[in-house]
Length: 443
Ligand SMILES: [Zn+2]
Image 1 (cartoon, rainbow, N blue to C red):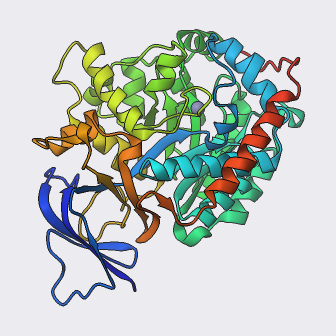
Image 2: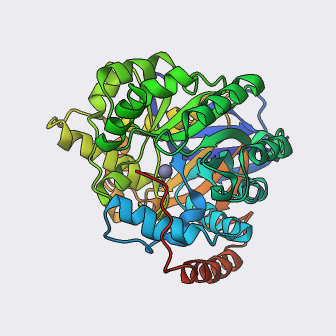
Image 3: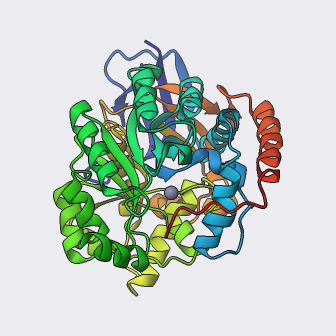
């Protein structure tokens, strides 16, 4: 097994004590970290890396995105949410082909590598092609093929049975770096009997579920009218929140205390995507309520059509700053807490409990940040530097499962030039088709 030793490096471990080490070392053997602060006795590395002027942190986990929506970056700007979705996004997606998803997700992977992201939780279509990107790139991912349940002619690429076959095809592949979830779009589009069927399948096959939940007051009102229950309580009654492989619910912007209690009881991971909330003017939830009810919150970027990028440093910084602003409390959301949300909380929800911490026995998912930059000096408090000053572009190296995916900003597993060319070409084709159409799915 390959052994690597990173020396003279500052380390933000995110261990239970919040240990930060200065000018220290990190030892990796195979897929695991075997020493933090010192190498194990008799450890002879195959590779030594001088970490002078660098900081090692657990690599980031993006808890909710639609990676291939890189194709729609900058395509649906300055619109209200309903028009953004009905007139732009779903119109473009009605012309989507599986190779678009491959190149779009590959472009996303390049961007995520460059921002220190080890794993992403993806919800989209033609997911075999995203799985290929995961297999080839060396990243980790939880993948869900989005289904609507309102007629096979409305599904994109596969109906529910088709997505089950996708899960069967990819189970156990990509050296254990892949998790497979069921992906109903949301309770505001999927009919109750369809959601109940998905919950049954999740229980039969021990699967997790990833969906969108409670994004607006209008959705809550419609759910109360149609089901007599809030969207959260509705999903709970259908068995969705109890999926044995875990439930990841994106957004949860409009939730009552009773809803939060249910989310905590069912150990749902809520994916918080603050930049989308601001860009689409959806409002920003007060996360102190989630903390009071002990709801796990992880951080995502959402798709690049509603955020602009897949930069987890931006998303985590915005989470910290917005919570201080919303709560009118500068003590809200300390740096250590927001880093845990952007790493271990997402990793655990996605089914990678050994990731998101630099500790002996943990998965070797490590981002190195080049701290030799004007905006990262001085270094009184390196956690503060990471949260409030570092940018994605400061990440110099990325290791996932003990393998280097990026060294000194060079991508080692992806042909970035070819990917940029193919993705830009494919994206132009996609948005030039069906531009006159409007595809309406409901509220
Ligand atoms: Zn989303």
